[in-house]
Image (tube, rainbow, N blue to C red; front, side):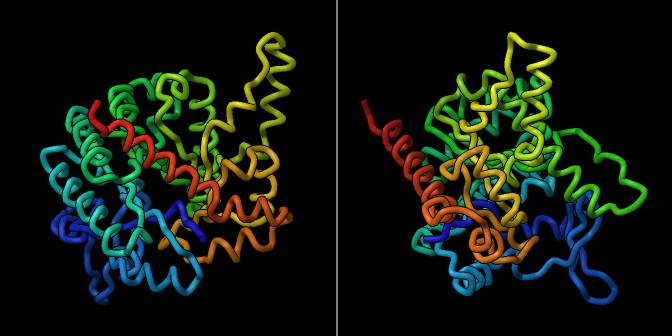
Length: 337
């Protein structure tokens, strides 16, 4: 098996909803006939790969991928819109994801969205996603986890996630009511989509391991994207800071192994460093399809200086064990008595 645990999907009614909008996030057709998505950091061509599951399945077969996690497009910001507007759309999208899993014989695995403008509605939808639809979990904007105080605002949602067991991908994205940061004066794609994004992922992981969230919600698994950002490079500096400035309170590096990670859009050198720090049993294959179209197995795993067992672990065993655990948790919680 080869299980891709980081991709995005804009189908399930989102196309029609976004076409009807007049401000971003929205879809529009340019004068040259090209359909583009207007998002936080500009526009990009919107091809069938973004919303047609058959295109996705064909690409998977071409690359030898057996399963793919399709997520609600969290970075787009649709889940931040007023709940009265977006909640029915998100519910329909989640229903569609569940049906895709059935129609594809389990090859497509859906990670749902929730309407974050109203936490009561979000909690109810999360419970429905796990209890009724059987999807493994949800995607959340990582800006809610840039600090301990910000993470506290989502405790009602995390408590709901803990009820049936839930997987949560913490993906770069804004909070409700938050304006996009100023664009850099130059090299925007590299500064925002690489340097800033990797730093953001590290901030999120730091919040998770330095808070009580992992202990308070033990039935929730948290996925940090892109191998935890810069952590495989800077963890020794974090340890040095603690050793020199807080000698009685060492940096809890070992707690990083209580999170899950994907290798989306990264390569073999980054994967090698992450496996040494985090362990192959915490790392999963990831593509960031359709934003990136590289075969993640051939691009990142095959050239990596890892053992055959470590490569197998990253390619499918970590994800398979996690998904099986989530299914077992749901079955336990949904069984009467």
